[in-house]
Amino acid sequence: MIHRRTPTSDKLDLNIGKIERMDSLHSMARSYFPHKNAKQLRTAFKVIWLAIRRSKEGKIFWGEVHGFLDWLRSKKGFTLDVTLSSLFKARNKMRKVGVIELRQGQWKFSTRLTRSLMILSEKTNSFQQQRTPGEEEDALTQLLYEL
Image (tube, rainbow, N blue to C red):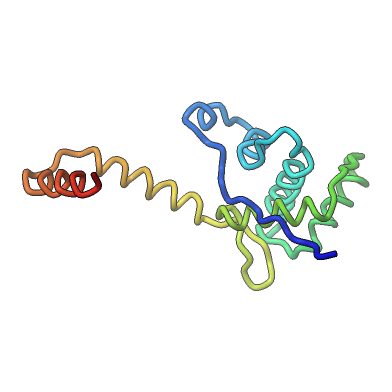
């Protein structure tokens, strides 16, 4: 039997209302994994996020995630039911979207997603500005070309 991996989607479920209501790490995890049966993936997302945030240098080797889970179990009394598969899937999506990146064998927070969203915001603002008559004519020509 051939085992086929299902590709991890790099889509985010975001809209203006969801962004405005986002007030916790849990609501952020829900925007990355919105489907009803994704509790394990949301938990894995939060585990990875908190493990990186809690580290001294802001970066972790992958094995340190298990150390973080052991720390939660021993110090805080929490036992999380997170499978290795869920951790890998959550990590893959976080990497694809640009939340984390692998540098020199360690996982750390990335600025790719925030940079991309800022560029999108700047471009949206620039496209809303008034244009010179020549630029408006070019825009109309492009519109008619699309038809």
